[in-house]
Amino acid sequence: MAYEFPADSVSVGEQLVALDAEGAVLGSAEVVDVQPIPRGDRTVVLKLRVPAPVAKRIAGVQVQGSWASSPLPEALEPLTDEQIVCRCERATAGEIRELIRRGYRDMNEIKAVVRAGMGACGGKTCSSLIARLFREEGVTEAEVVPFRPRPVFVEVPLGVFAGTDGRES
Amino acid sequence: MTIPNYDVVIMGAGSVGAPAALAMARDGLTVLVLDARPSQGQGSNKAAIGGVRATHSDVAKIRLSLRTIEIMSGWEEAYGQDIEWRGGGYVFVAYRDVEERKLKELLTRQHMHGLNIDWYDAHALLEIVPDLNPDELLGGTFSPGDGHCSPLLAGHAYCDQATRLGATFRYNERVTGIAVHGGRVRGVETDRGRYGADVVVNAAGAWARELGRLVGLDHPVQPDSHEAGITEPVAPFLKPMVVDIRPAPGSANYYFHQLATGQVAFCITPDPPILGFDCQETSSFLPQVSRRMVEVMPRLARLRVRRTWRGLYPMTPDGSPLVGWADAPDGYLMAVGMCGQGFMLGPGLGELLSRLVLDRLTVEDREVLAELSPDRVFAGEEVLK
Image 1 (cartoon, rainbow over the protein chains, first blue to last red):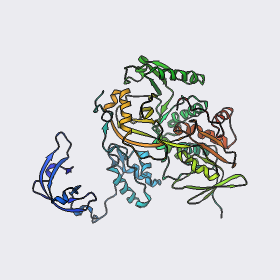
Image 2: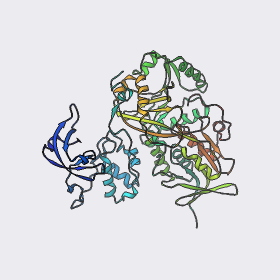
Image 3: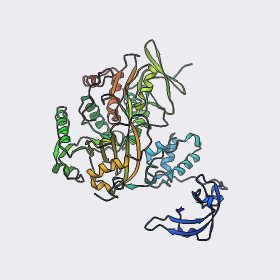
Image 4: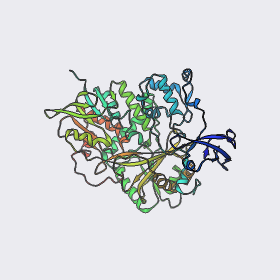
């Protein structure tokens, strides 16, 4: 299993909850090895021991406790105007809030005007924060048009597609 | 029950509808723009990569684009909004005799129309675009008056100014009928209401044909799709749009430029065309276009691709738009079939449409309209699409 968290957050012998592609619980899995990817980013490879019928169905492991999906005891403080919502393009909560107050409901239109979601990550971070701004402004989810997701999801040099492996030919 | 009345209803808030609404509102007309999508320019306008040139071969496109360039280049001064206009020009490169001949033949006609474009030999062209692959480069044309602009910012800027002047934009609203009585257009019906109008403009781009059917007309507009992409932003290194018109297996020309914000945006023309409305991104586009771009500009190999998307070119049989009144019903105005050039034709065309509605046409306008007449006989395709 690819595991995109720090290697020291998991240890050999630990029992994790294995999940299928839909996120349904498959059962318990024992960590038997933790290997970093040579030259790679912070992704590590976990080797897990599970019953054979389960092995081919594992798509992930649960890393968060159930608390992570429960409502917080009290409402979050509203984002302040100067807080950065889109880190790639440095769009602030204030800029986006102003558009929402002017009647913007299409996240693709917000993107067109303040560039939120146009950066390297493709809106992975800002889309949930923009959703939060809509909630703060009392706009229901049903009124909001989400980002149109587009490939590619990781930036790749043109040379790789051109067959020159990212180097000048 | 009274229904809201307007002088003009425009169907489509895209690259033609938005600037047309602005021109009409400025000329004192009351305008309603209806669009089935959730916000401005969400059809094909946002898929444009932003190139704007007046160096066409036909007089209509030349005049409309020249006016567009005036509007875009003067926008920030006039309205205080930055729409990222950059006058970097266009470079058409020639690596083979056949393209050199084609471009030089075209130059004669372009000079006849007074366009600022010339042939540069390889050495001179490399001074304009130093990163071009010099191997077998014969030269190319350079037109410094052309440029590029952000379709996203420009579209919004037109709508903002049109709204300020009293135009109304309604989104998520689909036109389901056009009311005609006594041979005249009287208004439109949508899935949410009815509006009265003396003039109804079809500016629905790739979707123009289905709206034309509402008045029993069959506009010869057939969308085909082109795919585009954009890289990460880097420091400025490329001013003009670079166009390579050589054909290759699966594609005709391709072109790329560096945006004001540093990214390189690029697009390719599939050959044979991919007809229809499908805008799902493909896995074949990047290998196809990257190979060609890296060949012409090896330095691009290191640049990382960020995103790809597809947009629709509403094509006509001869590659030129269809603009003008319908014979019947009275008051039905076509501004359709922009053939992928709506962004560069739209602002100039919008002003012309307003003069047409107000019966204030100039001699030049009449020449443009004669060339773009929906009743014309379709001859050959334009030399340079």
